[in-house]
Amino acid sequence: MNRTLLTTGAAVGAGAALTRVRRFRPPARPEVPHADVGAIDATRAADHLAQLIRIPTVSRRDPEQVDQSVFGAFRERLAELYPRTHRELELELLGTGAMLFHWRSGNGAQPLVLMAHYDVVPADGQAWTRDPFAGEVVDGVVHGRGAIDDKGALVAVLEAVESLLHEGFRPARDVYLSFGNDEEVAGTGARTAAQTLAARGITPWAVVDEGGAVVTGVFPGVPGPIAVVGIAEKGVVDLELTTEDAGGHASSPVRGGATARLARALVRLDEQPFPPRVSDVVLALVDTVGRHAPAGHRALYAHAALLRPALAGLLSRAGREASALVRTTVAITQLEGSRAPNVLATRARAMANVRVVLGETAESAIERIRGVIDDPSVRLEATRADDPSPVSRTDNEAWATLTAAIRAAHPAATVTPYLMVQASDARHFAQISDSVYRFMPFDLSSAQLASLHAADEHLTVAALARGVAFYRELLQRS
Image 1 (cartoon, helix red, strand yellow):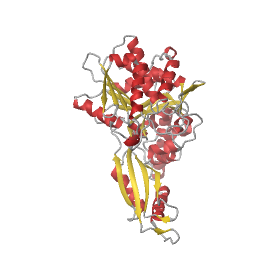
Image 2 (tube, one colour):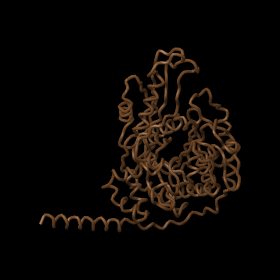
Image 3 (spheres, helix red, strand yellow):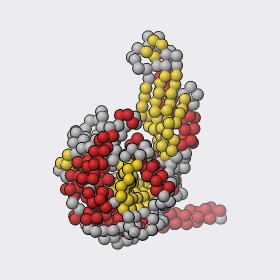
Image 4 (spheres, helix red, strand yellow):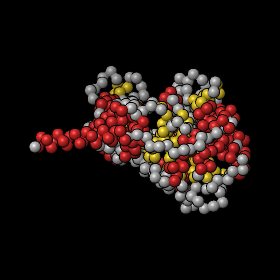
């Protein structure tokens, strides 16, 4: 009898599982009129982006190495390229050059904030096939540092605003354009902008900054384009690891010196990565895109909530991007030892850039690293320690409006929330709004994603035009 009950129970369970898989299909897509991308002056937008790429607004950690005159020249060129925006919107300069435009609507509705940053990372020492600051437009592609990160988005926003102003459009709610000048060095520009709005009692209806994009082939077993919208971002810890020793002449080395102990610590971190874990945000991503997968993957995705460990293992092995979604990562980015080839190091130093997944904190990540290293002679000091951001809402009008604008500009894309593995200026606005979304409205290839902060960054003119169309749709639908 017990065997019969077990057999019956197993059959019922299997039947329920099969039913769930059969029903695990994409919901009916709401009808959204397609944006008129063909009406966008793509040539003009590409030319403007190219001009702005030619102004090398490079951020560096040492403020003394930053040429502020270049940033001033960039702002002057913006005023020349977008005269209506500068004439009809109010502009405040904050801190050392953050720009905050205010487009008044005439009513008291909560405002929409559109963000971008105009500083870029250096291109030194990278094997570019073109001059990174030549701003060339060749065969329908804009080449150069900042084409995607993040001058492309800044141009798309301003092209949308300028064209709507030309048409006599007036927004239904106030709009702020917040353009940071030091995002790449985790500076204070965007923080000052958020603090300025907070001091004035302003709670944004929605905030849209850089983040996810429209991508293909990055999620296991899921075909077709996916528009991934970051509703949260991982925390960031910059962790300095140091060891010290007496030093001396390199002709008489000792075992276990400063460099050896530091190297041993780094190898341990590399060999013992953080365990993968599936957060609710990643679960929402799986639930959305998994419905488009073939049967084999769909069987797992349909039961993702019950099979989190198996799903975590699958994603952790699916590639760099997918693995970063489900685990805290540790990247060793800088190494220092002795300054002479024949002198033993009295101090060895490494910098670890730690990206903290949801469900963990900066403090818990540091403590695990300390335990993995298991060497009290290796000193740990956090020069930056930010916890993961709050999770933004996906059950409100702001999210519905955002997704409708994405579908209008990218009709074939599946829109889904996801966890942004990079850091952005948007984290500062998460303190004053529960609807902060991280999305670049461009369709990007794997090669383009790999070019961020690397050589040969580029953006197609067609993608730039769809980005302009997205911002026009968002402004008109808000």
